[in-house]
Length: 67
Image (cartoon, rainbow, N blue to C red; front, side, top):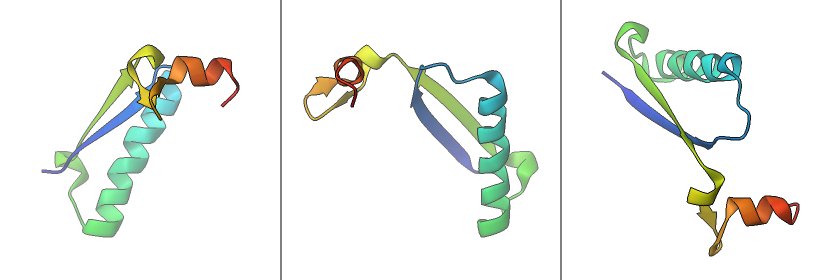
């Protein structure tokens, strides 16, 4: 039973886009590894930009600077 965890920042990802991620990830595992879609688990975690850092600073600060 494959388990996939996707972590993204919580910046306006719609329920439809999340559904696409889940479907696409499930299909990828089926097509590449032959995994059964009925037993494939996909979890999406949305993280506040204040709780995600790159290069020693938060995503919030980077977004404010346009990065």
